[in-house]
Amino acid sequence: MTVPSSALALQRIALEQFATAGFGGTSLGSIAQAAGLSKSSVLYHYESKEALLAAAVQPAVDALGALVAGYPGDGNPDEHDRFVERFIDYLFAHRLAVHLFMNQGRFLQHIEPVATADALLQRFAEAIADRIPGVEDRIRFGVALAGAAYSLVAAANWSSEELADTDDVRDALLRTVSSLLSSSQPAR
Image (cartoon, rainbow, N blue to C red; front, side, top):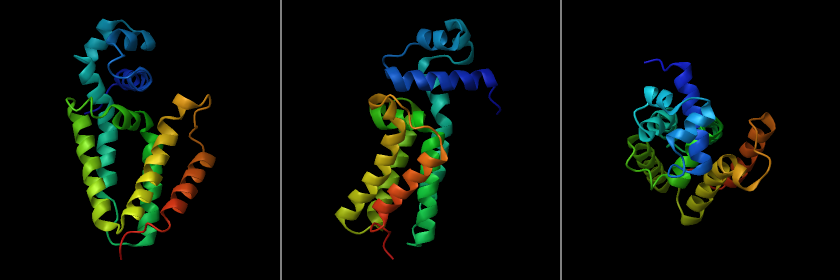
């Protein structure tokens, strides 16, 4: 099903509002105002704030499912490095949805795609625990990936400059995460 471009723009604006003010602090009226629409125009596309959030995060949930399914289990360092690249690219593509999952996920469990994302993250954590021996290496892995996510999705909360989608930022994240993970390679 193809989503009209006006609905996609509305989803992007809604994600920005939800990430900035929180789901509870965002109303359909504030989303409509930010989009330059009436509340009834928003309701034309989405029956509720929950339906709008579900539609807005679904692409990120689908991509997260593919990312988790592609986590290498064979210990091949090249595959591990490609996974880190895919993870960083995922963060760049879906930073606002990831921000919601990280900061409001437990509160938003009643919204099906958010519950699915939480289950995927749990499955990913279990795969890491199964494939990476040692508590210290698991913690290093978690800090590396969560730190990259935090740097991209929450930077606006503590910095006047957002980390832009630039090759320099991507390369710096790849080098940093790879460095942290150098001793956390999956068990061979």
